[in-house]
Structure formats: C-alpha cells, structure tokens
Image (tube, each protein chain N blue to C red):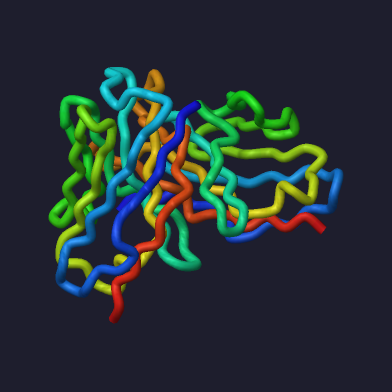
Length: 123
Length: 109
C-alpha cells in the first residue's frame, strides 16, 4: 500500500532555505511510469503546483517559483526532496508531496498525496 | 498567467445534485481532473481524465467536459461531500507546468 510522508523543519527563517523530504513506502520511486512532486497550500488559500521529478532526475517547475526551487530524487533511499530558497512569509504553507500519473494528453496529475506538513516562515 | 476559473461557492440540499464548473482555454485539448478536500485533510482525486472515477469513489460523482468548460456533478449529494473542490489541468502557456482551479466551497444543507 503506497504511503507518502513529508518531513522537515516546521519553521524556516526569512531569506533562508526551506528543505522538505518525502519518503515513499509501498512503491519504488524508480518507476519509469510515474513522476513525483510537490504541491502547496497557503493558509486559507487554494492549491499551488510547485513541480515534479522523474526517477532520472528530470524536473519541471512552476514558472513563478522556478528561480528558487530545486526538486531532487534519491532512489537508493526511496525519497525525493524540495528545496525552496530565499523564503519569505508568503511561502508559509502546508506542503504536500504526491505521486503523479500521466494521461494520453501529457497531463501529469497527482493521484496519491501525503498528509502534508506545515512550514512556517515568520514575518 | 493561465488560470482555471471556478465559482467560489455552491450550495446544495442533501439528495439533490450539485454542479461545479471549471473554465479554461486549454480544456478543449487537455484532460481535467477534480479533487475534493475536506477541512484539515489532503485532497482526494474524485475524477480523472474528464470523466473517470478512481476506485473507491462513489458513483454519485461524475465529470464531463465540453469546449472550454468542465463540470463536476455530485448526484444525490450527502453531508460528507462538503468541502472544497479543485479542478486541475495543464498550463496553457506551452511550458510543461500545471495549474489548479481557483476552488469551489460546497455546502450541503
């Protein structure tokens, strides 16, 4: 049974880097048929797609976050990670990791989600 | 930037049908997905590829898409269907990035 679990510091200081890890169990992150990625939700707001990665390390990022985001994968430990640089209070959000599936029209959509972790950047 | 537009709220009586729309210029060419998020919980996929239901999702959830608008219908709505609903699809900018709709809060009362 697939499980995704986010982990990382609950607080990041302004201008520093927020780092989160998603540990995958019940599935291999090395599958060539899926992507793995991150989504966030600011308090009281909607969902925002951050980016995805495949097992070879190929990435796609949100244009609005691309200059500050890095997603990496560690196949030996079956986890992937998010680094968000130069954070501000606007980056305070619940961060979800997810497993993405493709469709025939090149839309990669999250089918399975972790429970989410709150990351706070004090103002 | 590209946006998928949803009505902010919808209200339905128990047992009646709720319909939530999602509009976007790329929808005639790309599939749409729908997610249900209850308060304090992670979103759950309820419809994929416009009109398919994942295993375990009740039959009262259905999806359709025509032109630039997709619709999620909840037939015979139940109290447990309350929450926020988001559509999702590809960004129309030509880059390989994706967007969620603005979200619709559904109240069953």
